[in-house]
Image 1 (cartoon, rainbow, N blue to C red):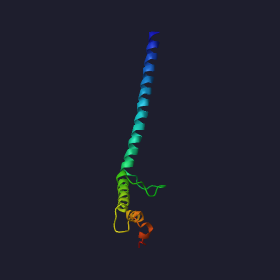
Image 2 (tube, helix red, strand yellow):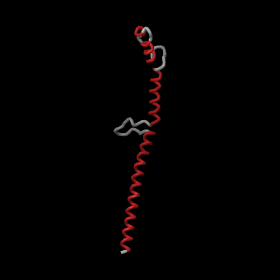
Image 3 (cartoon, rainbow, N blue to C red):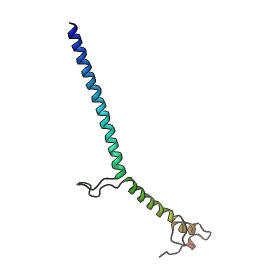
Image 4 (cartoon, one colour):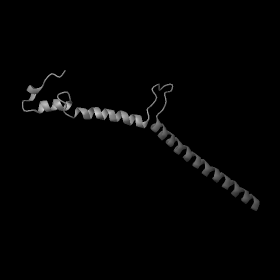
Length: 104
């Protein structure tokens, strides 16, 4: 009878160890998938079937955002009549719409 109990305890310990190892493996897979997604976001993805343009990396996307912001900032500074700022200043001037000119 003692051998039967010892055998059952050994089987329970082995099954418990497999369960713990399985849960650790699942956790590790989830973490590694998140890490792989982070690396893909940082480095970008090459073109492939279904996505012929690929996907630019984070630094490339940041550079394009900075270029777009620079264009907007350029419109906020007066430059002699061609910027958005100049158009707003003309409309806000005391003579109002009379100051509006045709810009080439």
